[in-house]
Amino acid sequence: MTTRDVLSTDRTEFKPAISAGVVPAGLLQQLHAVVGEGGMLTGEDVSSRHPGVFMARIEADAILRPTTSEQVSQILALCNAARQPVVVQGGMSGWVRATQTRPGDVVVSLERMNRIEHIDLENRTATVQAGVILETLQDHVQPSGLSFALDLGGRGSCQLGGNAATNAGGVRVIRYGMMREQILGMEVVLADGRIVSSLNRMLKNNTGYDLKQLFIGSEGTLGVITRLVLRLRELPSSSNTAMVCASRFEQLAKLLRHMDGALGGQLSAFEMIDNNFYRVNTRPGRHQPPLPVDKPYYAIIETLGADQPRDTELFEKALEAGIEKGLIDDAVIARSEREKLSIWEIREDLEHLVKDFRPFYAFDISLPVGDMEAYMAQVTARLHQRWPDGLIAFLGHVGDGNLHIAIGAGTGTDDEREPVEACVYEPLAAYQGSVSAEHGIGLEKKHWFPISRTPIERALMQNLKNLLDPNGILNPGKIFDTEPGSAAGEQAP
Image 1 (cartoon, rainbow, N blue to C red):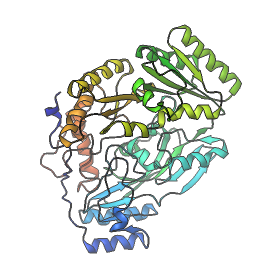
Image 2: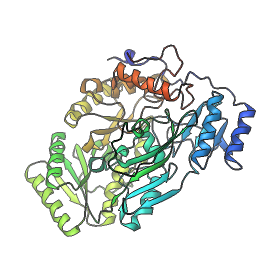
Image 3: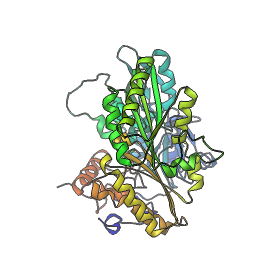
Image 4: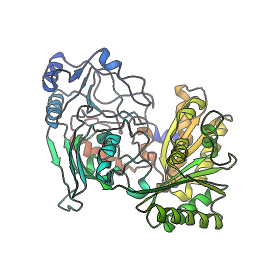
């Protein structure tokens, strides 16, 4: 598949079927009456707010800040009747511009829907509003000896509703799965204002279609997630962390299987960083390198368990066996919480990478672990063929097949962005890989969507959009090149 096959419009343009205009004053008055004093922002209060990771600013006529599902219902009913575009915003930590707005949009921010409603200690569930911050829930349940398994770098700002809407992944997917596996029940407000309340609290419920799955990963295009019932786990009482290095990627692939088998289910993270990334973050004045900087590949391995002495012994024996098998060139084990945090900071600190790689491009893809080495070599070769001095670094959750790619190449002009993206996305077709592992499609990747989904799959998704949002008011222009009502929209056979 070529770039020409994938791109149907200029990637930098934002042209949903519903044209952006000005929100009618009468509608704004009705919306203000719903959310009350302090519930609606306009003018400078909109444009001055934090726009998110990869957006220049928030452009919208109003930001609505409801506090209940009922208010969200009234907002959507009014907007649907008026054919008013609505963009839902959570913690704004996504990488694919799924929350980007235009003048004439109305934003629904869930920041005030931030109540932890109930913790059920017996069933180990948490019922929360969608605006609860991930780290807030983690801290809240810890004194009860429980944990919420999802964990990622944006834990201090991302919201649980956004985690659900993007099916967030993070560093512990290898053990606990993605956000999808953490959700038992969900409440969603549809585009016409109807509230679908499926706040199931049971692990097993096989009564008909599992409707919540429609909305997990839908990026706010099918409905607004307002409340969640989340699965909690027992809080691990032991933890072990090590950083290892290897001369060949094949070693890490085999080491992953070796450690998973030797640790009896305790493996919770297996994070790879390449030499380019490692060198950037361990330069003088930055992070102290725990291992020499001359190896092609590094990995952070973490386990979670229930008996620290026993688990430490098991962890060390597994690493020793890995060395004996030639799967590890060298290793260092964290002997304190400070050493553990120092190791993880090398992986999670992106500030230096963004500073050194100019212009900075970030990518999030996935493919089978066995194909990663060949893919990385192919992407690097393509980049250097076009930009011989271009910078590239790979890191990611190799345990679940997810690679993050950082690139610094060219001058950052719009006409260079598509060739940079082509270096990353086009090779995925041969490996049946995914152009998005954990951040979604949004605006950033919708033109590359056909690499990972067949025409019938895309048409069926469009049909679901047409069914649940026939007027196309929810997050218009995201994921699909066409919106409901467009003559060019795909139809499933």
